[in-house]
Each structure stands twice: as structure tokens, then as C-alpha cells.
Image (cartoon, rainbow, N blue to C red; front, side, top):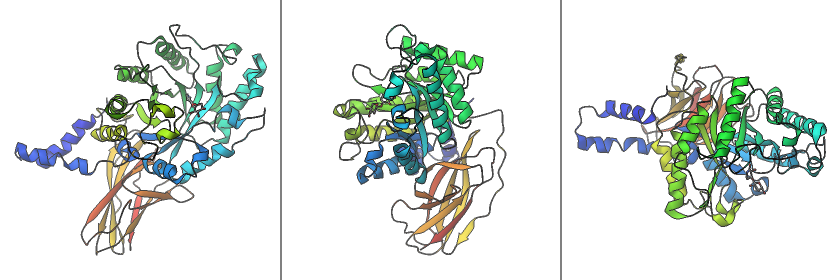
Length: 464
Ligand code: XIL
């Protein structure tokens, strides 16, 4: 069972406005809008989800690009830099320079990383394309082991196997050199990945699997069901979600996501782009977000690039920012839909009551005070809010939030975070001006992945 987000909000408001006339209710309903996330990561974070993008290492030096990426997204996928041809250009010679550039940028900015992809028929290095049989199987498993070991502990989710099913009506596997090594190549790859990085979520990722009635969707579904029943280690299914007029967002998308989730895996939208423009594009984006928010185990959405001009399908203008970095109508519809919330919050575990954390006292910091208050809780994470109160007129503030191992902050909103090298101490600064007059308050929020430790973070404030 999950907590309906809308009901939760109405519950809070209901208490606040009880006894007021209906006209006053309209005014009161505007209150949460003021607290709504103003970026994609903030708005998604309110329901415990992430919002990500693909990043190309050679664009990080473009400040328009990196500014938008840093502000809006908290989950990063390397667009090409972690693929087999990039990471093992010669057999047994691994090359991580460009991948590391992206991973380091993401982590130093407090973001998580989706690994993409360990085994795939496409973008193989030349030496692998010419291999077959046992030597190819062993080379593939060695690649999975080496790369997943190198990035162990740094990856939220790995696309262990990408695009292994055929298009069309067969519902079967795609022919490839890897497939010809034996039908069990996929499960062998998953087992190798689990052994190399036991804490990363392991995903199967594919395209044209969005429509529940398509044979390819059913083929992947049957494989995941089989894996779960036989204990093959799989944690998630990625839906690439590359849409255009010939392949529109299906009206049964939520059904597909819900049915996969019911197998006991998370589902993620991993490479979203929708060709088009204006309100029709905006509506289709809204539909995808709505479908994800309606499924408890749909834990996040990643778009496949920042600006239209960065897209692999640039001529189809499929992304949320135009070539100049302006927000498109599609951006606004995604943000609004994220802020409207869904009918579910992710991965609730109703059978395990959440222990009540100990309450830390508010911490004074000269002329401002930081107070922590708890937000929503899930089985693996919780949200918190820090309220900053100015004790005197101040022109700026900064606040530290210290979490306790193995806790990690995985999302933030309404502030500009930076991190110490341990990753345990986040320093939050105001996104805009931090000026507050005496008695005024402002707040920021974050999500903590608690790893079993429910202690509240300690918070401080210092003012300038
Ligand atoms: C694409 C990249 O965006 C391009 O830059 C590259 O030339 C080809 O690959 N499915 C996937 C992604 O899983 O890795 C692909 O990315 C897009 C389709």
C-alpha cells in the first residue's frame, strides 16, 4: 500500500483551513504552490524521485550547458563515455578518462550517476565486433566485471544489458554476436555485475517497450518475470522512451510501468526525448511524467540531453530547453506536473514502521538559526526541511547539514548545495539573494538515503 500524495496534501491543508468558508479554501490551496519546486530536480525530489539528464563530456566546458545541467538535474548518465567502445577500446586496456570527467562532475555537484551500459550489441569496440563463441562470452563478462568494479560504490543504477530484444512481432531476442553466445548471456552479465558492485541497482534497458500491447514489451516482461522467479539478480527496468510522431507516447504507459513494477523491480524512464514542439510536445511530456508519478516504483526520469541542440536527434527538437538554453513549453509542463504530484510516492514499505528519530535542538549561528523538521519517509529514505530564521537583518546566510554514515543526501531543492570531500557535510547557500530581515524565514529541503540509520541530520546556520 502507498500513501496517495494528493490525499496527503489535502490532509495537511484540511487541517490548516478547517472551519473556513469555501472561498477561503481557494486561497489556502495556493499555499503549497509557493513551496513548489522551481527546478526539475526539486520538484521531482518532493515525491522522492530523481530527475536526470544525459551528459556529454565534451560539452561540460560550455557554461550555458553546465549551468542548466547543474541547476535542473540530480541524476547523470554519460551519453556515450561509459559504453564498451569508450571504456575498453583495446581488449583488456581500459580507458576511463571521459567517463571519469562526467562521474567526477556529477559527484562533486552532489548528483548521482546512472551507469550506461555494460553489455550491448551496439557501440562495441572493433576487437569485440569480430569475436564470437566462448571467447566473446568471456570478454563480455570480463568487461562487465572490470567496469563495474572500477565504478563500484559510485553508481546508483547500471544498465547491465541494453537493447537485447527484437523489434516487431516476434517478442524474442535480437540477433547479435552476444546473443549467439547463448541465450543465458543476459543473466550471466547480471550475475557478474552483482558480484562486482553489490550495491548498484541492476537494470535491463530497452526502447519500444512502452506500449503494453507490443510483443517486444511482453518479451522483456516475460524475461524479467523469469529472472525474478529464478533469483537472477535484477533490480530495475529502464524504459528509454524515445518518442516521435511514428512512435508516440502510448496511452497505456502507466499500465506498462505498473505491470513491470508488480514483478518486484523498480522502473525508470532512462532516455526520454519526444520530437515535436509547442503544446503538443508539452502534453506528451506531461503524459510521461504523469505515468511515472502514478506508479510507486517509478523512481525517476532522465531526459536524453539538455538543449535541443545537444540531442542525438537535434532536428526533431525533442528536449526541454531550446538551443539557446531557454525553457520550452515542454519544460513548464513537466515542472508543473511534477509539482502537482502523483497518486503515489515511491517504494513505501508499510510493514516496517519507521522509527522516530531523536530530535536535535535548533542550532544558533550568530544572527540566524537553522531548525530541522522531518518530511515524508520511505523505507529507504526520508525528506527533511531546514528553516533558516534571521535573528537580525542579514544580507546572506549559509547552512551546513551533516548526515551520519551510511546516510547520503541524494536530492536537494530550494538552495545551492556544495559538498565536502567525505560527502557527509553539505553546505547550502541561497539560490538567489540571501537577504532576510529580522524575524523572516526561508527554507530548503533534501532527501536522505538512510541505509538503516534514521538519525536526523545536524544543522547549523551562519549569517553575513
Ligand atoms: C546515442 C547517443 O545519444 C549518440 O550520441 C550516439 O551517437 C549513439 O547513441 N539508445 C541508447 C543510447 O541506449 O545509448 C543511445 O545514445 C540512444 C539510443
